Image (cartoon, protein in one colour):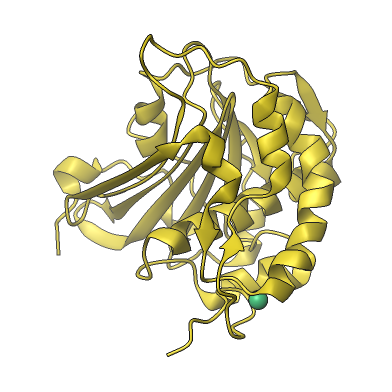
Length: 277
Ligand SMILES: [Zn+2]
């Protein structure tokens, strides 16, 4: 059976680049400070609290933009995705390099859309189950914005830095022992920039999710839904993570996201409250 493009569902190409060229050019500008004897590595990982499954795949960093995926079509990759890369690269590059940045509301939506598109592609490169729905992908493709029920945050990484990592953490959310649904935490780290996309399944209604006033914790700033000009989007946030602290942010064990709708802030720990199925 021919593989289908995860976005338009037409026949997929024999191999499209997962990451854009511009990312390689940004990586060329970074002086890697690695522990002696170690080479910069790029990795993809997944952690599922419901099944206790953990997987991790690692490559040399110079290959970040040469990873090939057989689940995209040439038309998508050279069409709307290329257009998106062109507007996103100038916004993302300074943050990846660690330069303080402001984004207006339109630019926040652009960065949020890029993060969503990228985690959709990374996720599809690892597995076919429990992924974003075709409807969510079509919103990104056709409307050039994240689906309204998603949350996107930006954080920063300092100190000894790995070049790039994609990870997804999947957990079951319960309230007083009652299962509410699944939470998927996608974290993309590219040098100093951390982008996190939060998806709840089933999703909250759009009316509820857009009304959420939460602006995130000290260690993050919300990208989507966008923050109005006052207080405005300013990166980096007050607090940066280091490599040791990053896993706590990735799993959100210390800072459960303020989720819209009936989920509220989920308080049951996934390790204690989650029941594997
Ligand atoms: Zn396509």
